Length: 325
View 1 (cartoon, rainbow, N blue to C red):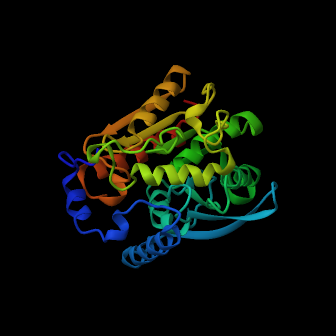
View 2 (view 1 turned 120 degrees about the vertical axis):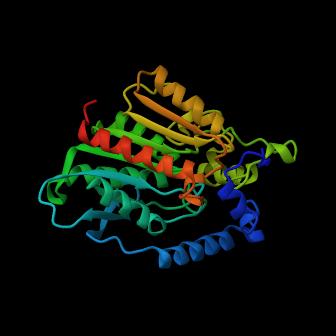
């Protein structure tokens, strides 16, 4: 699917001007260099982003009980609010192998401002240095910290949701399963933006029209190898690690799933959304024509990018207003 015949126009223009390194798949040989490049790009983008007035950021620390690792949470919240706020746990993307909480700070602050809520971005550890279950346990540590400290943080325990992007959405899906099975804390919703869910979606491209821009098959293979470590290729990979393997999706929070039709993940995301629907989970699914992986972040001012952002805000506004629905 490297064809771009109906790719969003704004993305076509950007893709043509990407440096060669950005066009290459992520592999073990270039991972460090890719991390450095993505970090530099995120830093440059941060310089161009305006300050969002009325939002303060706190860095919180939570201890992962698995290995006593100190997990950072960046809590963005409106100033001068006396009432308890809804809270969104935000999990950044990056194929389980790149990315950081800081790189998503501006987007998190925008949500906090527009919805008058708190947004906690968790800085989970990356694979392959830290394979499953450590990244998921870091996210679980962050979620439990929020629930355990709602009073001191002035948060509404009935209005806590999760949002994940790409691999972060894969972590969010696994986190909702883990939360349901182990803690039973009441999440009011989950937003899964083009989630990375299926560790078996690792076939090599059969030709130039069977690959994908931004996140190609080779990167996906390396991402799953890195995240699963010794579990990679096993028949019994836990559903917490790869939510597409779950045989029981009942009892999960209301869901919004968004993906583009030119994304490697489109088929697995549609199947997962259907699984949620069949399990009785209230689920909204939107597939955007012309959307490649991360289309809404690459071209936020495009019509699909704007509509996707609006959908997310509407969904969050609804669940924070009526968490029991």
